[in-house]
Length: 114
Image (cartoon, rainbow, N blue to C red; front, side, top):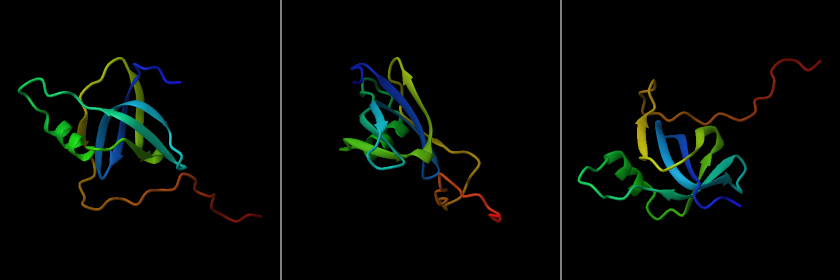
């Protein structure tokens, strides 16, 4: 059973951008090859300064109870002591409008089977 105060920082690729989100629960999804994030955490608007990337994430995940992220898109999952800012970073290196087709998890060996 997960601890009540656990917070996870999950970094993953989505449409040529690097997303950094915080969630209270992270586990294997019932769909093969996916990780499920539940109870996404967003900072409260307590100050005058508003982070536009966090506002975009909040709008994108508004009303989402849980989301499934493909295992191949995940860069890193960390358990952290406290929540931080959610961010969207450019994924650097690729400046294209074309999203690459996902690659398979297992590629069969090539060559003759003698």
